Length: 402
Image (cartoon, rainbow, N blue to C red; front, side, top):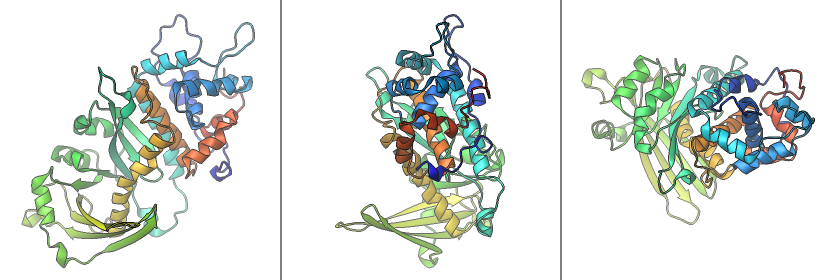
């Protein structure tokens, strides 16, 4: 699995340590032994190795050699021993760390990694070279963080489609608050020429206008019954008279699926659609046939600010499916590989910090070409030294200081 990641040289992978240095330390100066960057690096390396809990974060440090702890920045005692931080120390730090600052640091790091991965280079085809970056806005609940006195934490993230990298994340309290956090989430990102996909919850006129007019981005918005006027207008278009413009079929996971896409231009002179800057209406139809069960079908309507000459039905189908695929490419990995839904961490900002570290691990491995995160983390787990090059850290203690 590690051979598939390619050479992990320092010139190819951005060093994580300067980004963690930007996170303010929430602790009082008196009594500190470990630097905040050192503690966060232990956590990051442990999660890349598949750690699921605070205890497992500490266990990675206990397995690490003295040389690795030196590289990470663990201070040496006067009696010449180095000890990794205990579970209690890690828990206190993660519960008190500034969640916004940690998300900004990890988001900036992953954005640089993503930019390096998708930067200038030979494109596989002319159409691929013209394809813009696509970012999905999607929320996720941390189910295990709920307590009798507090509801579960809910996070809203901006995630690139391919490879899957979390560029920004905010805590929104509950799912119903996602809409009000749409702009603060995307405001720090450079979205010029980017296509942003989101579901019906975020298909709000004010947010869409801000996205196009202020951020100079395009969008693909799913339209459902919560936007009754726009939904009625799009559903009422003469779809029966429009030929299917793209089809795709897949078989796997015990089912067969076929998908088709139709598009229809929206004429402003005829009143348009009750959605700002809409240029194309989209109908995505899906048929699903699980083995031994009856076939089901579903039609989903969407609109986009792109004209027919700026995109194609195939690209629209890929973007729509890519948005739904975030569930498998990110959320499913966090829940299954890293057991996020069963995590009982709930104190302070610790649930959000753990989610941020999982985003970091997934993004770092995805940008290196890892397709099976579970197998890759297992390959790293047995040898603590393997985690450092994944995060751009060499094993030379003199390259950054201790």
